[in-house]
Image (cartoon, rainbow over all chains, first blue to last red; front, side, top):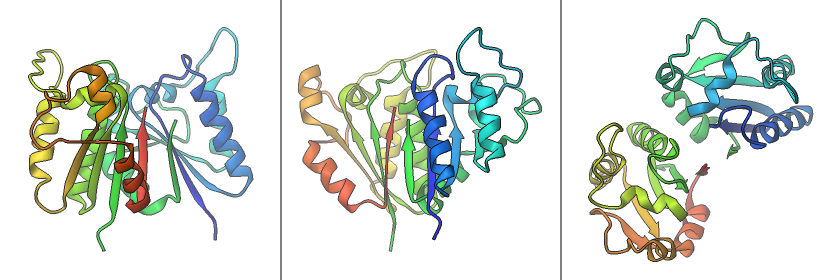
Length: 117
Length: 121
């Protein structure tokens, strides 16, 4: 039976190595036929912005888009977006708005493993 | 059978957002009927330090005090602070009501007994 992995990312995309760790882990798990969900919460929702143009290094927006194309589900928490004044109609294509209720269901009922990077 | 969620808080309040996010997840989990265990470790032990007086931010101590009080009734919420961490910080005798001073052996037991364990960063 297909296993499921939930990855929580709560930090802004360009300050920590853990962001790339989340992307690589999600990508490798998806290749191994694991059902992967990335849940963006707190400052993690800053990664939902389209048109990210880092001066150098990996583009996290592009990385998320590639993961979504691979079948990884990417969710962003509604209150974290609202707290930062981020409009919900300008998310990277394919990201879905979620909430604490759905997160609790994902943790307790729908994921075999949960990691908060 | 009631499922159990263990949350481990490692970060200090007012610096990281996760001590506050943990409250939101804990309250939602209880609302859905899950038992909740909270283990605070390292600077996470500051969340239940008494006499916090915040103005600009939600008071994490008051929110946890309320959550712990409600957690006396089913579904239960248990709250353990790591004794070594509170001793290091000199706050062992300055915890809010309902906090149990414990140790990593308790966390090990909770990891064994829980359906899910999430370590917040």
